[in-house]
Image (cartoon, rainbow, N blue to C red; front, side, top):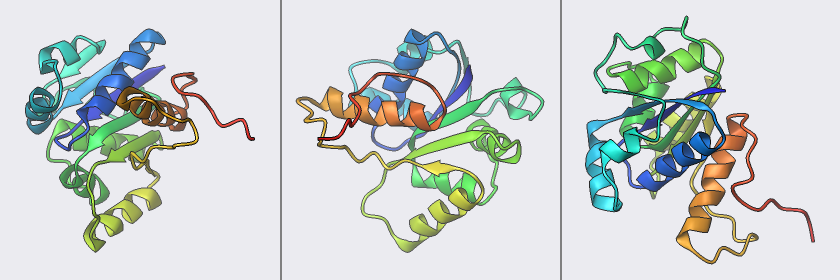
Length: 185
């Protein structure tokens, strides 16, 4: 599959990184867009650099590169995952404000009826956040709050991250076995 991965400036850069690692291990073609705030947050939250994160992707684009192929509906990709997705980015997408390559590519995913999975990172939520999530859902996007499941009995932060990354891939239509699945009692 060809998958677009977006990373905006919210906390939780580890989700986007883990999704990219998983897609690479599974042999999928990935196209990465990081906002400038994501680049800064990667430096703050992780032991890696934006440059190393870019190397996990098949192709990486600058945030203002409106000439990138992914900015057009004629460029085929099957799914897009934005993890983490700041409320600013979610608002832009939900309201059709394509002011950079990430919001434009999400707009392409919606207008072409492709899978768009958004992992928002904010708490608590105000009514504006909730209404923007409603708008995005009504437009065809899927909202995946990064809420861990404890039935997997996670023993580390990595296992919690894997659960969310695995769910994001599931929702994007990508087979994976990153995290244990519920098999009943």
